[in-house]
Structures are given as structure tokens and as C-alpha cells.
Length: 105
Image 1 (cartoon, rainbow, N blue to C red):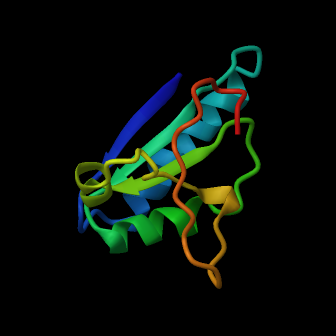
Image 2: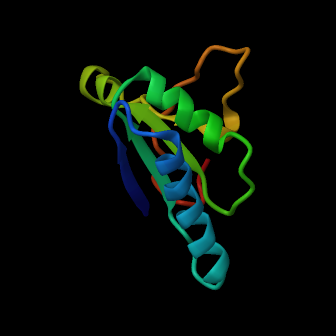
């Protein structure tokens, strides 16, 4: 299970932060329910980078996967997603396919 979030280019960072906090707050309040991973589709590379910065050091029971519209539309092998917890600023972005189940990855 996944939640899909669209983040158009130029969206303000405080709006993204609010969306992220809402997911995490809901998951904290309903800890008896497994919360799905979050898929963020960014409108451009800059928005993707901001999303990564906002989610890179989150300690929750679900993951954030981030990509861009361009990656989704132009990549044939399915490796379009960045796992925000497994991506580091000083390394090239490693793109992966989505896990088939929430407990994978």
C-alpha cells in the first residue's frame, strides 16, 4: 500500500513540510494500524531535492519514496524512485523500483 502525493514545481516548502507532518502525526496517533509508504512525485528536480531534504532524517515506521514527473515518464526500467533514507547528499542518486509489499526494502 502506498499514498501518492503530487508536489508541483514551485510549491512552497512549508506546504510540503505540513503534508509530511500530517502523515507522521496520523501514523503516531494510530500506531495500531500499519501506515503505507509515501510516494512523492515532484514537478521538477528542485522540488525533488527539497522533498528529500525534508524527509531524509525522519524516523517513522514507513518510508518516503521520491521521484520527478520526468523520471516517471521517461524511464523504461521502472527504477525511478529515490528512498529518502538511503540517499546521501555527497553520493549520486540511486534509483530503485518500488517494493511490491510494504515490508520489503
